[in-house]
Length: 245
Image 1 (cartoon, rainbow, N blue to C red):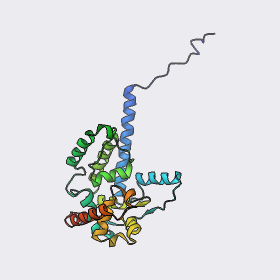
Image 2: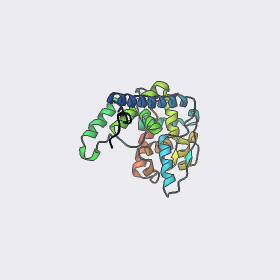
Image 3: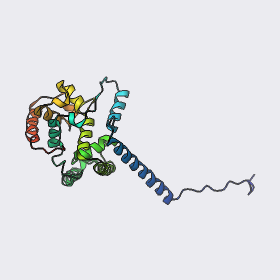
Image 4: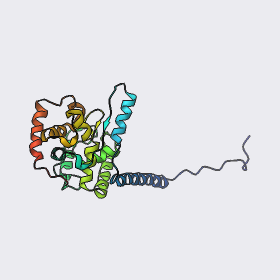
């Protein structure tokens, strides 16, 4: 029996495309405000964990491997000047002068990325400064995509706007990964050389800097022809590297 007009349900109002777009933009804005607030807090508070750390902890929780966790925040003045110089020399030689992004290096990475269409599978490679790497470590995933790269550039701008170069380098050195469960220069110095980060020699600091692009590999190959040769090169460059006072 057909329903009477009085009992029929009124048609549901579907959200318009404009409203959905407004909601999406609002959510994106809230996310950016969250990032900015966290960065502002880190201008005075130490970084206790990062997105990369949490991802590693989840893998350890669901995996079968038994990995010890090592991470200790050390103030900038208690880090050897050689680890600062070595990391800058190895990872971002223009750190003090660039605005957080080395556009020339990024352009070269873009060209390289687009010259290997079969291998890249829509992924972006290389060209990151220390500030960009910090942005990625703090908030993002290891996955490489254009969307993630865009968000990385936005966070990089926030870091450069809200923090000085000294604080950015301090945060990076205290949060970057140096092997399975090894985060920060203090943990790396103790893990590989059985000493605090304040006592690292030029060559020891250079060896740690060489590990950064592939920490999981180099933690099992700390000595060998390539890393030995590269460490001597970075140690020599470190003497001229410019770092925040």
